Image 1 (spheres, rainbow, N blue to C red):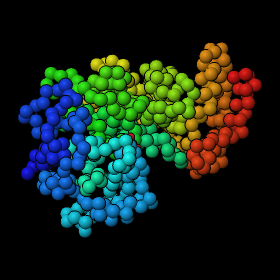
Image 2: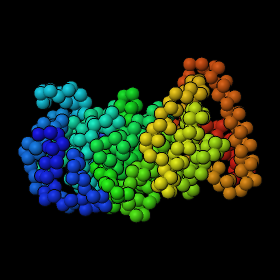
Image 3: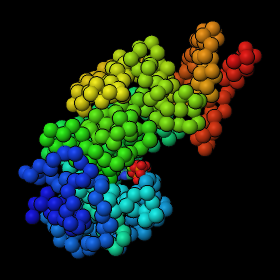
Image 4: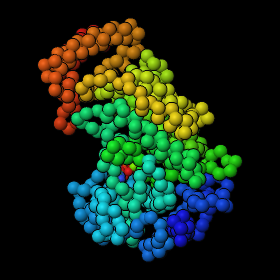
Length: 453
Ligand SMILES: Nc1ncnc2c1ncn2[C@@H]1O[C@H](COP(=O)(O)OP(=O)(O)OP(=O)(O)O)[C@@H](O)[C@H]1O
Ligand SMILES: [Mg+2]
């Protein structure tokens, strides 16, 4: 039996009586190869067995593992193998080879285990098996197998050594993610989405595009993971699919939240949010930021198509080591992706065509890598002053002078210690959260306080 045929049968088993695609306004296509998927089907998952699944998936590339096997693979799901945890449940690192199953390539894997008390369930597990079992692309994470035993639901993926973009962008302590790496990630992730929208046998809307769902290979090649919310795109003349509104706060497109109408352009919006996070080095939603900046898109969007103001958005930890021309082009395409009118957003092919040539720009300033920890408190001060134009002018002049002083000091430091690679104006506390400014910054703050800022 072909893989696709097997997967259709799998759906027959897992979904019980076929209920059609209730949540979709698309007409189902009779000659389609890939099974339609609906998140409105009411499936308990209790009506099928592991044996049925194994039988029906025989011949497919997916391996059906037992709990005992996955226990052995992950050293009994030991905490030291825990890679992280999300809405589905914990993810453990493991190792497989042909001793487990003949023909298995020796490799590390990530085993995701459904938390039975968690937010997700059989439905998401099944969507993952259906979509990732059929879709193969260099920018989609590879699903190696699954486990469906009693109430247990597990997924076994290729191991992605660099973890998620979320971890690399927001949780790195030692050095900021370089500009060229951010661009490479953006291009890879864009290619993954472009494949789903334009090149897959039938268009797929991913619906959960976000920094934590983009995983990274050793060389920072990006791969999309987590197809638990994915949907088949609209069919025939239909313009959208109607669904329950699901996704992640901060990433979901505004019109989708309002109407439940899902299109590929909803993914394009989410892509724009991640692009902005890559530019700014900030999360799309952060309650700890000053009021106006809590929502990154609302705050930053007006700056994206303004070359002068764009530097306010750029991640300070890049410390100027990025292509100015490249950043402007990235910002311009992010601006379009974040348009409130879905029709004004570019499609993902255009996004790839726009971003890929930027990899060849070589106007990135050279020099030792400099890490400058984020200056949240300074941003807060700046924001208060933005309300008063006169104060803003003084602020700009002060900042420029302080920056010059800092640059001179940094230059002197570099001359004295030419091999030093880390120059920081703040000291990062061990827990990675508390920031202690050095005397230079304390002086700067005192100066502001004395001015009544
Ligand atoms: N194939 C993999 N290789 C390496 N690490 C992985 C892999 N899959 C997931 N992880 C890691 O496991 C952690 C949890 O991932 P998971 O996808 O379950 O949750 P999430 O994406 O953080 O949240 P959400 O439930 O909203 O998707 C993340 O830190 C991720 O980097
Ligand atoms: Mg995820």
